[in-house]
Image (cartoon, rainbow, N blue to C red; front, top):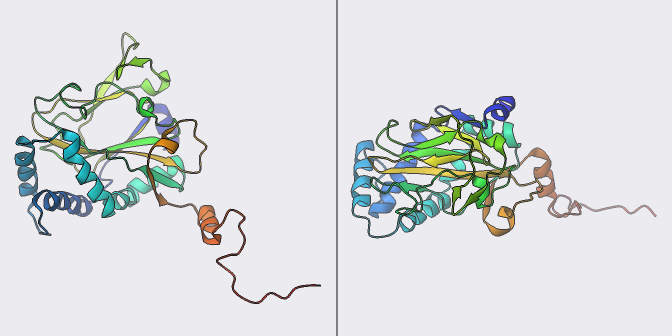
Length: 269
C-alpha cells in the first residue's frame, strides 16, 4: 500500500465505511435539519428532504454546513467513521497509529448552478491542501455523504501532480501548470473513500443535483511539522499507538509512576 500511495499520490478504498454507519450519519443529518429524533427515516426520504432544504437556502453554504459538522463531531460519528476497519487499516499503514483529524468545519455543500468559487466558497478550483496550511506529512480523505448517484460530478484529480511540489498560486488559483497533464474524475459510491496527498492537485466538479461530501485532513500528531496547521487550527486525537498509550497512562512528561503506583515503597538506606 505504501509504495502504491507513493507512486500515485492517492488511494481509493471501496466500501470503506459500512452501510449501517453511513445510514446512521445520514439519519443524524436529517434529524438535525428537521429538529426530530426519528431513527428509522427511509433512505430516499433523507436525500429528497436534503434537496428541498438546500433549494430554499437563505444562508451561505458555510453557515448551512457548520452545525452539521459540529453535530457529527459532537456525536462521535467522525471518529467512528475513521475507526472503520478498512479505512483505519489504510490510515495506520500510511501514518502510524498516533492519529488526529482537523476539527474545523469541513463538510462541502455543492449546488447546481453554483459551480464557481465566486458563487460558492465551498466550490473549489484547482488547489493543493498545502495552500491552506496543511503539512506535507498530512493526508486528506474525501467521501460522499448525500448525493444523487456516483455519476454526478464529484471531484477531479490531476494525476502525478503530487510530484510537482508546491505549485505557484495566487488568489486561490494555480498560476503555473504543465501544458499537458492527465486528470481523473471520481465516481465514488456511498461508503467509498479516497485518501490523497496534500500535494495532489484537485478541484470540485459541477453537479446537476445537490451534493454533500466530507473532506477531512489527518496527521500523525507525533510528527514535527513545518506547517502552521498545528498551531493555528483545531485537532482531535482518535487513535494512540501502544508507545503513546504507555506515556498517556503514566500521566506526565517525566514518565514517573504518578498514576500507576500507590503501594508502599521501602527505601534502601
